[in-house]
Length: 82
Image 1 (cartoon, rainbow, N blue to C red):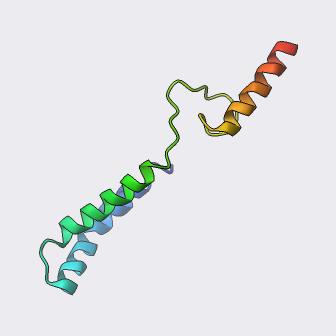
Image 2 (spheres, rainbow, N blue to C red; image 1 turned 90 degrees about the vertical axis):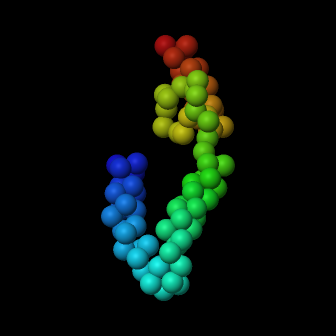
Protein backbone atom coordinates (compact mmCIF):
# COMPACT_ATOMS: atom_id res chain seq x y z
CA UNK A 1 0.00 0.00 0.00
CA UNK A 2 2.80 2.41 0.87
CA UNK A 3 4.43 1.90 -2.53
CA UNK A 4 1.19 2.36 -4.47
CA UNK A 5 -0.18 5.59 -3.01
CA UNK A 6 2.47 8.32 -3.59
CA UNK A 7 2.99 7.95 -7.37
CA UNK A 8 -0.67 8.51 -8.34
CA UNK A 9 -1.02 11.26 -5.75
CA UNK A 10 2.01 13.09 -7.14
CA UNK A 11 1.08 12.43 -10.75
CA UNK A 12 -2.48 13.64 -10.25
CA UNK A 13 -1.37 16.91 -8.68
CA UNK A 14 1.72 17.55 -10.83
CA UNK A 15 -0.22 19.32 -13.59
CA UNK A 16 -1.90 21.69 -11.16
CA UNK A 17 1.25 22.31 -9.13
CA UNK A 18 3.30 23.00 -12.25
CA UNK A 19 0.67 25.37 -13.65
CA UNK A 20 0.49 27.20 -10.31
CA UNK A 21 4.28 27.48 -10.17
CA UNK A 22 4.47 28.79 -13.74
CA UNK A 23 1.69 31.31 -13.02
CA UNK A 24 3.37 32.42 -9.78
CA UNK A 25 6.89 32.80 -11.17
CA UNK A 26 6.38 33.29 -14.91
CA UNK A 27 9.21 30.80 -15.50
CA UNK A 28 8.23 28.09 -18.02
CA UNK A 29 11.07 25.89 -16.75
CA UNK A 30 9.36 25.39 -13.38
CA UNK A 31 8.28 21.81 -14.26
CA UNK A 32 11.97 20.96 -14.72
CA UNK A 33 12.81 22.49 -11.34
CA UNK A 34 9.90 20.58 -9.79
CA UNK A 35 11.26 17.33 -11.24
CA UNK A 36 14.79 18.12 -10.05
CA UNK A 37 13.49 18.81 -6.55
CA UNK A 38 11.68 15.47 -6.51
CA UNK A 39 14.83 13.72 -7.68
CA UNK A 40 16.89 15.36 -4.95
CA UNK A 41 14.37 14.19 -2.33
CA UNK A 42 14.65 10.65 -3.72
CA UNK A 43 18.45 10.83 -3.73
CA UNK A 44 18.50 11.94 -0.10
CA UNK A 45 16.11 9.12 0.84
CA UNK A 46 18.41 6.64 -0.89
CA UNK A 47 21.11 7.26 1.72
CA UNK A 48 18.76 5.94 4.42
CA UNK A 49 17.78 2.72 2.63
CA UNK A 50 19.07 -0.46 4.30
CA UNK A 51 20.64 -3.00 1.93
CA UNK A 52 18.68 -6.25 2.21
CA UNK A 53 20.26 -8.31 -0.57
CA UNK A 54 21.12 -11.75 0.73
CA UNK A 55 19.46 -11.13 4.09
CA UNK A 56 16.85 -13.36 5.67
CA UNK A 57 13.29 -12.02 5.77
CA UNK A 58 12.41 -14.09 8.83
CA UNK A 59 11.34 -12.15 11.90
CA UNK A 60 9.62 -8.85 12.51
CA UNK A 61 12.49 -6.36 12.07
CA UNK A 62 13.75 -4.71 8.87
CA UNK A 63 16.16 -7.14 7.15
CA UNK A 64 19.79 -6.07 7.32
CA UNK A 65 19.53 -4.01 10.51
CA UNK A 66 21.34 -4.92 13.75
CA UNK A 67 17.96 -5.54 15.39
CA UNK A 68 17.09 -8.05 12.67
CA UNK A 69 20.43 -9.83 13.06
CA UNK A 70 19.87 -10.11 16.82
CA UNK A 71 16.36 -11.43 16.31
CA UNK A 72 17.57 -13.98 13.76
CA UNK A 73 20.26 -15.19 16.18
CA UNK A 74 17.57 -15.61 18.83
CA UNK A 75 15.30 -17.46 16.40
CA UNK A 76 18.15 -19.71 15.34
CA UNK A 77 18.97 -20.55 18.95
CA UNK A 78 15.31 -21.42 19.54
CA UNK A 79 15.28 -23.62 16.42
CA UNK A 80 18.38 -25.51 17.61
CA UNK A 81 16.86 -26.15 21.06
CA UNK A 82 13.78 -27.79 19.56
